[in-house]
Image (tube, rainbow, N blue to C red; front, side, top):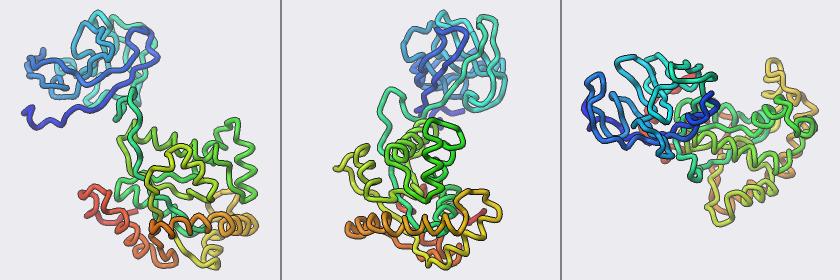
Length: 331
């Protein structure tokens, strides 16, 4: 492969939990000068054998690169500090596998390590996210549209409801409190909701290189906005908002239809009425804040799916990879 055709290696590898603690640590794009590998391939900056390669961030490794692919052995390899191979993975993956157990090689010691790929240097702050808030009454279809935009346009869909339900099901310390708030149709406190959103966005940026986010169901109150300001500051530009407007009668019909297969504790008429009343009392004043700042795209959610998606797509296209804009709608 012509080195000029290779994309710069901007990924970082984190190795943890090995039987040889010296192997653990951060691995950065290799700075090794061009040289011919054992298979006869001439390496280039950040690469070895035509694939991305990494040096130890601490500079202590005797071999450069310390994490690389071998064409001769058809495997990814991680070296000890003295340069001897400690762990390997026989495969043809373009990047070091993160979803399978590595093999303990001749100079390695069990257990084999875990490998995580970072798109942002873990030593540096996460870049600020590009956020669009998404609001609408229960059953307005905002979640469906966010999922479609994720699949079609590459935006990350983060649902506050889904994040909270996942925390509840994981049995974390706040699980009982989250369950009580959701079932009663009340808003979960800021310290829980905003922290979950921040953590999810940082993870998606570091591990997936994603920076465009649709926050589904946030901010549900002016108090939520206070929590947002505490993390991102009041000087940061106010995000845009997609607001899904839909008559109550349509919302009720959709919720009752969804209840037949969703299994959600809050998909019933009583919970929906509580949620809708809370939405009107606490969320609509938030909407006015965004309207006053000319930051709202209002979507008639009672329209058909294709018409609603056309509005969503149009509002997101300026920040979307142009290659995705021409994709036919699926799903």
